[in-house]
Length: 82
Image 1 (cartoon, helix red, strand yellow):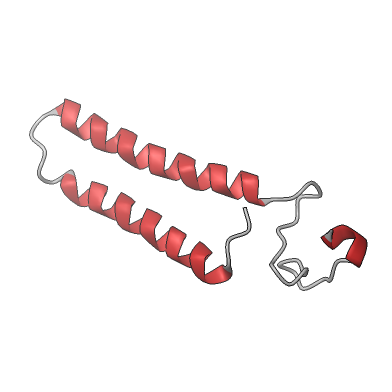
Image 2 (cartoon, one colour):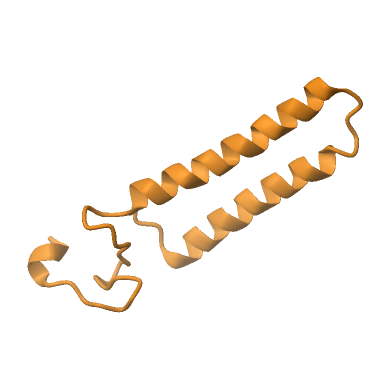
């Protein structure tokens, strides 16, 4: 999807905060239905993170940064960048 590293970190922090707040809410619920709804909420957030990770990978399976290098530091040729 082309997130900048800062945006990717902020997205992960937001997902972590959301699931953490859902976990804190579990102490306040009084019935099983509410607990299941909170569990579904956390599951949906984790599914969104999984979808973003899947979409963010290119065809050869290596994540690429904006400068044309992979996360392992290997550079792409100009043909691969276009």
